[in-house]
Every structure is written in C-alpha cells, then in structure tokens.
Length: 528
Image (cartoon, rainbow, N blue to C red; front, side, top):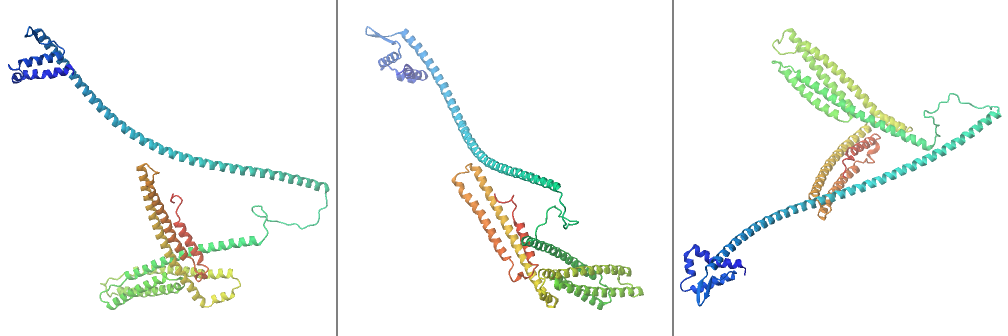
C-alpha cells in the first residue's frame, strides 16, 4: 500500500475529528488510550515517519520533535496529494477533449470516405462511358479508313483506266495520222456516192440508238406513266374545281334565297298576297334543300338537276320581281300611300344586280357542263387510244345505254370514295394510338433513366425487369400498329369487279401513297 493511501486512510479520522468533536471523542477515550497510541504509532511508522510515542524505562513519553516533524511531513504529503489530484483532473479533461476531437475527426473522415467512394464510382462510370466513346470513335475511324482506302482504290483504278484510254487514243491518233498521210500521198480519185445534206444531229452530240424491242418497250412504259400522271393531275384539278364550283353555287343559292326572303311585301290589307309569299318561301326552302342534295350528288345526274333548279329559281325570282313592280306602280298611282313599299329605283338596281348574278350563274353552269363533258369524254378517248379496234365498245358508248353504264361507274366511284374516307379515318385513329403509345414509351424510358441515375448502378440485375418492360412496350406498339395497318391495306385493295373503270386505280394508288407518306415517322422521331 502506497504512503499516499496510508495518509488518506489515517487522515480521515483526524479531519472528521476536527470538523465534529463527537468523532474525536468517539475515537479516543480514557479506556482506549493505549490502543489509540499504538494505532497512531503504527500509522506514523507505516508512512515512514518516526514514532510519536517512545517507551523508556517502562514509561511512555510523547516526543514533541517527532510530533512536529510528522505533522510537517503530513502537510507536505497532503499538498503533494492535492497537486497530484489537480494534475489528474487536468489530465482527465485533456483526455476527454482529445477523445471528443478524435471522435469528430473519425466522423469527418467517414464522411470524406463516403464522398470519395461516390466520386470514385462516378469517375469509374465516366471512365466507362469515355471508353465506350473511344471504342465508337475507333470504330468510326476504322470505317473512315476503310472508306478512304476504297476511294483511293477507286481513284487508282480510274487513273489506270484513264491512262489506258489515253494510250488507246494516242494509238488511234497515230493510226489516223498514218491513214491521213497515206490518203494524201495516194491521191486517189473520189468515187461517186450519196451525200446527206443539212443533217440535224442530236442536242447532246450522241448518235441515235437502233429501234429495238427493249427501247420501244421502255418508251411505251414511260408514255403510259406520263399519261397516268397527267390523268391523275387533271382528275385532281377537276375534283378541286368541281368542289369550288359547288361551293359557289351553294353560296349563290343562299344569296338568292336570302334576297327573296328579305324582299317580302309587308302590306297590311293584302292577306292573299301574304299567304302566297309564305307559300313561295316554303317552296324556295324546299328547292334550296333539294338543290343542295343535287349538288352533293353524282356529276352525271347533277347537270340537268342544277339547270332545272336554276330555271325554277329564276322563274320564282321573276314572278316576285313582277309582283314588286306592280306594287311600285300602285304606289305611284296613289293607292296605299301609307304602306311600306320599296321605291322603284331600288327595284331597278336590284333587277340589274340579279341580272348580273344570273349571267354569272349561267357562266358557271356553262363551264361546269364543259368540264363534265370533258370528264365524260376523256375516259372514252383513253379507251379508244388504248383499244383502237374496239368499234363495238364505241358503238355501245354512242347508244343511250352507255349513260347508264357511266352512272354505274360513278356509283362505284362514290362507293370507293366512302371506302377511302373510312380508310383515312382508320389510319388517323391508328396514328393517334401510335403517338399515344410512343408517349407512354418515352415516359417509361425517362423513368427508367431516372431510376438508373439515382441508383448509380446501371448494370445490376434489379434493373433488368424495367428494361424488358420497356422493350415489351415497344414491341406491343409495333405489333398493334402493324395489326391496324395490315387489315386496312388488305381491305383497301381493289377487287376484280370494281377494277373495270380505268380512272379509279390511279386515284386509289395516289390516296394510299399519300396516307402512307403522311403516317410514315420521320428519322428524327423514330425510336432509338
């Protein structure tokens, strides 16, 4: 046991005795003086000090010098103990602060380690991408080198061919010079022969080819293609012009009906005239509706019906204007001065305007009749050109039954037009569905890329189901688009019964080509 420990154990009764007298009284009494003395001597000797009580000649004496020295040593031990205690406290605080600093340093180093790991992962990913890019560039460079090598080979072959041609030309030139010299030296008599005067060569300076079966077939095919393209262009122009003329006729009829309605007589005492004008207005509405249906009908039946409807409207307008003229004359005579009647000058102006409109209508009708005649005569001319010996067919067209056949062809043409409208709607719906599915695919692709970027593990197994899902969505889109387009294309092909008309096939091929061209995706918007 250390002296400091002995000192602390021996110090406790002394300090407690100083603080409380009861403790001192309890430590030493008259009965235990001898035990206390021996205990104090033992404690002092254990601390390495001299004994306070000495025994001489059988008597125990108190040594004052020893007591003072012991007290001084105890005081010094106590001070050293306090200093050691302070030093230990400071050391403990220092060790606590060092421990806290080391703990914070460890946390910071862990964060730096995580950050360095992430940076290392990102750098590895970037290095992988750069390696892929380098591989792609190397492959592109290899392809370019191969292309350059191929072009160099082509240039070399062409140079050798050019040198060969130059040598051949030089040999021919030498031969021609020798022949010319020989002709100049010989000076033979010129023989009698035929000469071609005023020869007209080709514009490109080349000689004309022999007329063979191949060249004639090629020119014949080009001629047919040119005729078909011209016929399609003319047919489209006629359809557009016919639609515009229908719109003009409908607008003209609306103007005439509105004019007839706006110029109703509004006299108070003429009830029969009011009933007559009401009946006329009802007839005009019926005529307008019927004429509208007639204009929208086939062109063969529409020609006579349009003429009849225009004549009927003109008669109605004429009778109405005569009635207005009679009312104006009555106003001038003095009868019905209080009635609301339009003046004569206004009637004359309206008459002139209506005459101009009627002339315009006649011009429109005449131009439409000419177009209809041209349209009806053009198939006959083409059939006559393709079949020059078909006199029986021309005879049938000249008969009255040819018009019925032409009407049947127009009906089939209208049926085909409705079929084309249905096909166009189906194509439009398919295109809308395809665009919607493409949008869904792009959203899935964006979600997949976001998931890849957040996880920073683009090659783990957990992302494979999403890749297969996106690929399956793309394959479903393509299969649905193919299933939608294929039946419609098969359904849109012309049948043998309806292919008798020569002017229906170009229209069908043109519309199908336009629809396929409009629905074809651009290279920038295709799936990557």
